[in-house]
Figure 1: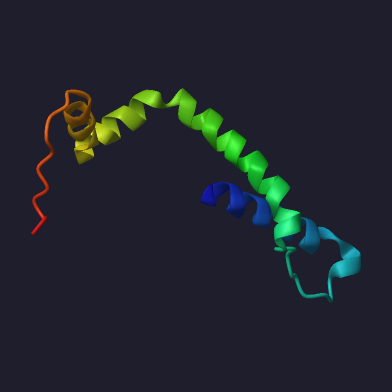
Figure 2: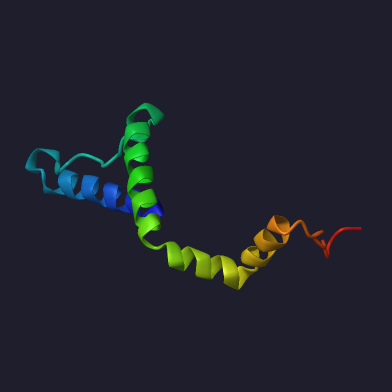
Length: 86
């Protein structure tokens, strides 16, 4: 999502800097929620589509950080052990 925002902002800046009538102006991007919400919604859909293509990557990361083990324990009805619980 951060990458989408950075690409969008860079595109806005390029458009601004390449416009001859705006050379003496200061670049201030529109960041109002009413302006960004539709753009953000589009980015969420694009990110979701990318994540769906990389499902194995997500499962591998869950396994590496231990989430897969916890999910399996819950599915099997096992009691979870909380090492930081008093």
